[in-house]
Image (cartoon, rainbow, N blue to C red; front, side, top):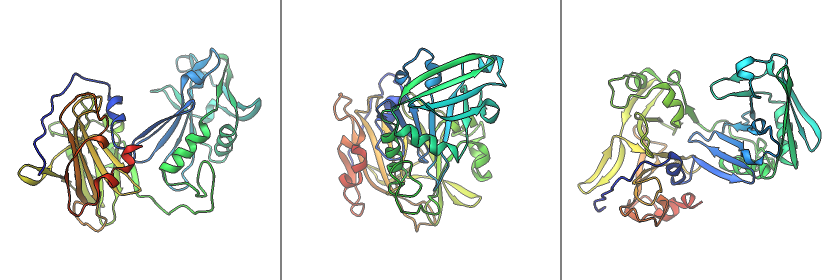
Length: 370
């Protein structure tokens, strides 16, 4: 039986420390050369240029981002930063160009872009041109992002080192390796029809059976729509049922609580997370910092004693595709009570409980050691 775990909560720390301490799975962050790769629980991935990779003084134009969901054959999209003063004054005649190794590879006018004033970017959705542009950049040495219009002319040159390996990392995580829809190193394997996982970032995506609880200001798990969009909520069709992992209110300094709903079509009910206590098998209403492993059909959570990630409590569940009710099956738990600066990351904490039929905990945590 698992021994009692007592945690003393340290002073608030940045949420980034908490995220970096989670077991690997869906939420991933990697630095690859001059690029950063991040993927959420629905396996939506973004490849972002690090600002320091820009070589010119107009570095604001360097903050480009590539995006792709995990859906089979999903289109590749691009975000371009706005030039100085655009959202204050506008510029209907503005145009972006991107050159790779001195040769123009892409051009687009601002009238053909999707403007996002909240973050100051333009969205590019061109399924025919963008894969070609990405391929040129991934195999190039440098690129120049330029803007010209009534606001003036701006340009910056960026290094492309690491972009190809970033694409390979995304392909591997999204299961596209050697498939015809890979970003890099395309193969002959056809993509599946569906992967059955999706992000939830708006009230409109929720059935009424869930929305009436989540949007009720008197509910213990009330979550406004803006936070839902930020909290990495997702759904997964397990087989006989669908699970939805949604935030339960706002996050703390480094722990975001989540609630679980299980159902089908429009009918969902609040469900619990299997747990072990000194009294025996029990359940939890909420868990923290959830992480989804699509390939192995596993879910984990990590409650952090402090942002460093050297202490806390972690749960690991497998998903039973045949279950018509709650599909979560607890396989093991890890815990560490001493916040001593050692054993950073839940995969390094001692196993405090293991199911007799849940398999080997070390094998189940192999992705957590990445």
